[in-house]
Image (cartoon, rainbow, N blue to C red):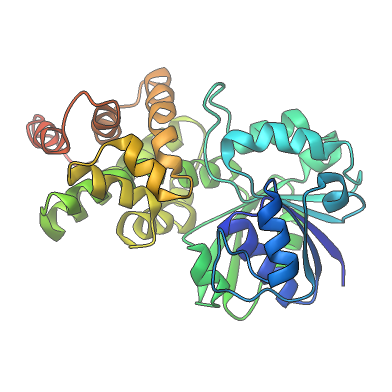
Length: 333
């Protein structure tokens, strides 16, 4: 079968590499951390980011990014969003001119407010950048690794490329839909993390299912408003990459962003929470970026503003909820 290079050996990168290896593809998984690569190759397990999941022989790890991507017809970018520009710039020199690039990183670049599509467009050669595809949706890595039925969306400006990615990843347990709306898919994946923090705070405060449902619904309204203002399609944001991913991240016990909100509501300090989390919680970084995008676009995002205030230590989670409830009544839109 075709070789695939997967750039990023976190839980999600390893899970996607596993999907492809189980389908019979030879997968080269690039890891920044030497101990992760060594564990994958010697113990057949990513003991740091995806412990307890056996990895097949077709999946081999390396710390040499050129070795991972050189000549590979498909390259999957799964580094944390803040590192994608640097990592994929390094990979770009070794990419095949005809390589199909799939981005599975969710987030917005802090310094520039660029989406991953904009980042890849800037650092990749023209042909791979044009056909780049973006995979997102409600998908906890460990559940995908355990073959729990999952549905995701892949978007690309090149419909033929999206169809190739759909065929590449589709399995009996991993269902892939396609849409042409790259902006909507990218924003849905980035914005939902902030609302998940708010949902976690509601749970941590013991406010019940009514409050959680209200926050998720109004959070989806915020995501849709900003997404539409930036060129995304409302129907995309009501689908798997928007509403689906939001529901999972805001309610699932495996959600790191929800866990941050939960612990904040219990009185723990943000730095302490992040130190013990062990993985990246993208919403902590994304909250400020989303607020800046909203301000630049003239979009009202009260839930996001409240989360930002809590993360910055300006108000408590309880005060944030009280602030939201004290807003003037209005029509639902």
